[in-house]
Image 1: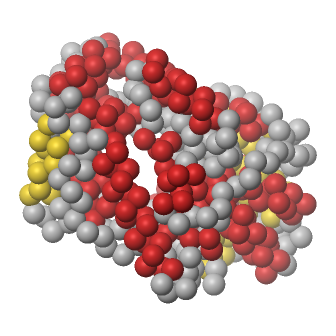
Image 2: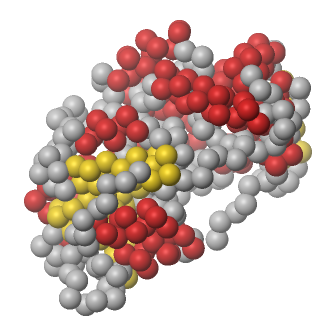
Length: 427
């Protein structure tokens, strides 16, 4: 059973619904609506049309909601090698699949193709001849698959943080470039903030030191102190997923001085996530069915020997071998990239290391009526920004967009003390 919120339009004559596709994957749209900046976005969009907040199958209020059950205590050597960490995720995901399969719900029920077809069922249930789509992050991947399968049902589309069919495979050289951009930007104010000015030196120094894994004290779900050991390759993999993070200079500075105060909360979050079961079966399954990595994965691996950061950890989790271990029996067959005559607005930050700008540029080439807005100093999540919300509302309202650059404030890099503080929680 699919669940959704329908936010009525403030002007009843407006008929074409805007369907919001949340990312993650596995994050509930009805949950994110409670976050004030997103509530503001959806309220703004009701000036234009009805807004549909869909909880994708397996998520949130949709039934069954296939959250994974709590898992066993992770091993102390979890972070010693990337193989250990990958094995832990494989074990957790496999256990989750077995738990739900024993209840008659299998991973194959949660493919990208079926989720895309769910949107078409939703459109028919709404009795809407066409719909508009607003996708964020992995929601853009779903939107592109929907266009591939049901292009006749789409009037307009906005994609923020575009994930292309092969975009789940990260390219090491691209991650290196983001790292060096952060290193150059933070250097002028490094001394003032008590940070190491040469981040590449700090990275190489720490990686060398971690050839012998370093003990790090974290807390488990019950608040008990737990000792883990951090190895060189896991450290590099963690850096590769935080290349534009304002905490990165503090992370490298602290570890270069054998201070684990910044790395400990990051490792603790991963450890506790595994204790909790590591998310939802839907998220694991849909990723494996969303990746068309036949060509891009060898390119990524060819870059590894010459890259600074090495092989991105995420790449191992979209291979056939890993997907088979977690009981996903089918992957998306190679197919032409989504394309067509549908008007599409692409919005991407130049500092988005999760869905780099290069992916949006590649996707835009397939659409004859594509517009690309690059947000300077923009990271991965831009929908909370008021200027972006106005841009999206104007686009769906068929207003002419003023082609001007959008720039956010420059990043503020955190000190070691600031970066070590626990993150603020959502609603």
